[in-house]
Structures are given as structure tokens and as C-alpha cells.
Length: 207
Image (cartoon, rainbow, N blue to C red):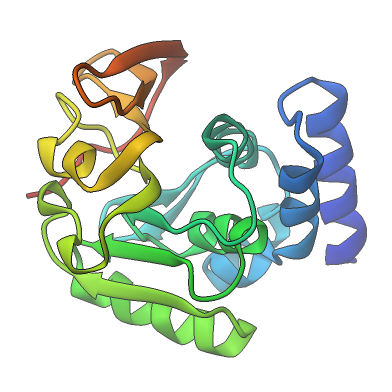
């Protein structure tokens, strides 16, 4: 299988369907070898637009979801981003392609997944910081961030994430239990603005 051709076809398909709008997001998806982030026995399906199991009851999100979320954060090079739910590391790698090395901080609940993600980042040359912990607490040592996002579903947006994002920044994630909505909050000094972008389905947030 030619992974490069499959990746290009995947990105072109997402653009045709209007699921990826920003060129920086499309280029990031073209740059990250998704097959390196899925279990070896599932690599033939790495460029299908669907989630795949990665162990510990977790999944790698479908490419269109990753693209949509990167689009909605409206990121620029040099911005610092907090991710909750490293998983296999694919989403963080796509984000890092947009904002640049050393600007993505990721929290993973499962130590095994965190260690595997660190190893992948090292092999692929990504400078992404990963720590094991409860994502509800964020990662206050590196705050304030320009944006934050969840790759797992929370009942409500964790207060710590909102507190750790600068005024004017976005916090994005799937909110809800049985039925989830992709929610984007804009952090303001006096009140937080809320937007929704339709139904999604993510694994529950741990902790």
C-alpha cells in the first residue's frame, strides 16, 4: 500500500466534502503519517475516515474530526496549545504541524498510552510535551495557553481548562454523556461565549 497516496486522497476527500476548510489544517493532515500512529495490524485502514481502536479502551479519532477541531481552534504558528487526551498522539501531531515545535502540551490519563506517544513523537521528530495525569486539572505550569481542546467527552467543560486559556482564546471539546455536542468556548474576562457545531461521539473523559 502506498501510504503517501492514500493520505493525499484522504485529505482531498475531506476538502471536497467541506470538512477541512483551512489550508494550514489540510497541510498538517498531509504532513502527519497517520499509519505510524495506529496499531500495525490496522495500518491498511489508517487513511479511512473512521476511528480505530488503539488500546486501553481508547480510539484514534476519524481524520475529519481531527481536521474539524483543528479548523475550529483557528490556530497560528507560534501559539501554545493544551491538549487533554494524548491517546496515540495523532491529534497532537497534526496540531503541532500548525503551531510549530515545542508549542503543544498534552495530558494523558493512561501511563502506557502516554509512554507510547512519547516514543512515537521521538521517532517522528515531534517536540510535544506529554505528562500523565487527570485532564480535569489541565497543566497549569505552562499556562496561559492560546487554546485548549479535549479529545474525550466531558459532562461539562473543566473549569481548569478555561482558567488556563488566555482571554480571547478558545476551549474546544465534546460535551455531554449519552449525546455529545462539539462545543467551543471563547474565554472573556467577564463571561465565556459558547458555540456548538453539531453532534459527535467520543470516548468518555477519565478521572
